[in-house]
Image (cartoon, rainbow, N blue to C red; front, side):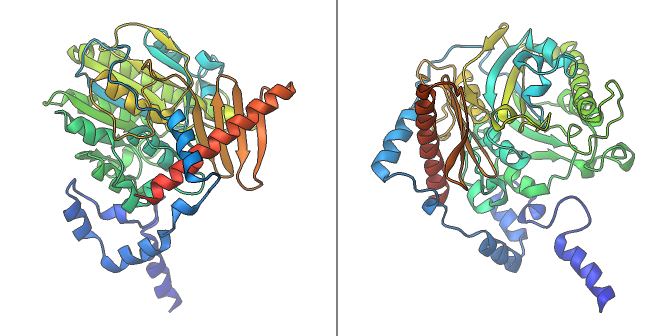
Length: 438
């Protein structure tokens, strides 16, 4: 009996890999009906029961008129006109989600100068957004923020809730409606945290993941194919594109624990893993620059989330990152120091392409003249943070108190900290209300 329980337990878990069984494992098509037909009805029912929750009732800080008033002041509707950064309205769009590539890695925002020399060099020629805060602390949450322009939650992952995530807009679907074809590349397990179901329903018709790489290409990293392998694959995929314009999403992998990489430039293991990803990025960009595809190419590099390195950094430092736009489609170098979120990438990009972004309720075009109150909202397991030009406030949702704020020198600063906490509460209540109503 005990011997039978072992294989049964493995089957229930979904195998011995990094990811466990989830609905997304059986998704194979952009057709929602076909995906639903492939799901085991009993598993689906039990999965849904385990995820059922009335999110709209959580974090009720204000009455509805007050919440609505605060929300309108934070997320006004922006006009279509915006400052143009690009040479074309229909570039090929490559979005690189860089695993854990936080601000401490990038010299342009005060990080170490020796870890990412290629990124720093590219920042000097492209458009660098120096105060782009990641919405969350995990890949599954950060990916939804970047691709769907949707905030992250401290208590849940929307990607793990297919009944909710399928209601979100997604960059691929929006671009596909404008004539693009969308592909996603990841060297790891595409079923991890329901990633496949999110990407399929989001419009990525072709998905390449760890199962598409031979075993000898995955020997250096327990998560899958390392960045050297996938950047080479990315170059080949781009070269094989017959349809233009195209959109490719790419999630890197090597700058993730256990930080084992086939590279030894830096002595410390963690910085060396990030240096490896940077080296792979630099080589890839220079290869692309030599091709005819470069002139119409827009590459957007943005972290999926930050990283707690060194271990004593604050929550605000953990989330304060960058976004970089490079490629032949970019007009000229520019530094954008406006406070913004990772989730604002969607509306900002779509506005550059002349595409409406009304469905992206929480995503703002940060280059628009209507973006008059720049701020960032981010979450972690125990709370949220709110940053603007006056400083930042971190709020502990367990203890219901402000746990961190800067600057912190005068009584006036505390008043500003309280105001930021109030605005952060308005965002928290609004995003849970929105999720509950989906």
